Amino acid sequence: MRPPVAPVHTSLFSPSIACRRRPSLEEVLSWSRSFEKMMHSPEGREVFREFLRSEYSEENLMFWLACEDLKKETNPTAIEEKSRIIYEDYVSILSPKEVRYAPLAPVTPVNETGSVSLDSRVREGINQSLEEPSSHMYEEAQLQIYTLMHRDSFPRFLNSSLYRDLVERKRSTCLET
Image (cartoon, rainbow, N blue to C red; front, side):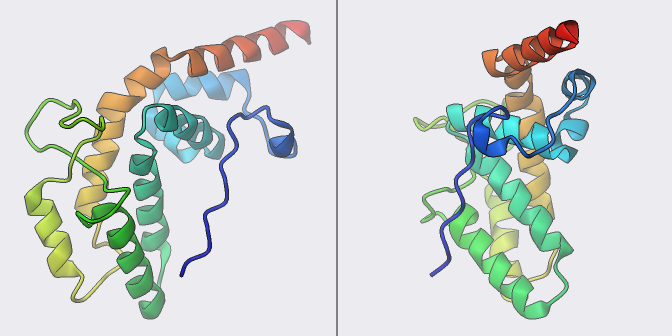
């Protein structure tokens, strides 16, 4: 049994995160110009994760992060374990957090839960890779999910009250100093 995942705090400004670096107005604004820049910023990912949670699609970012972690792994035993965990948590059709992606369709929800599915070709490739797991076995699926977040979730994030309020708080802070 794996240890429970630590809870994610709901705001960059909550007291429990006070010791973390808070992004500057310039950094927060840079996220609107570059999805990649936001994804490489721990603070950007945290805010984006909060937004995705509100849309019931947090598992997309969690899958992407788990794949990033797996790609850094060099220990064969750890690779096998992490690849199995990713499969069980995000890819298996029995998974409660199944990452869903619809191939060759508009990037919109395809079921009642508001999530999308990995296409069957990619899922089958992953199933075959499980026989001899590698640290890069989820790359194609990870790219599909990254593209989904970039094209679908990210524009909504930038228009969300969560992001707009963060920008306004940063602007207010800048005016006060």
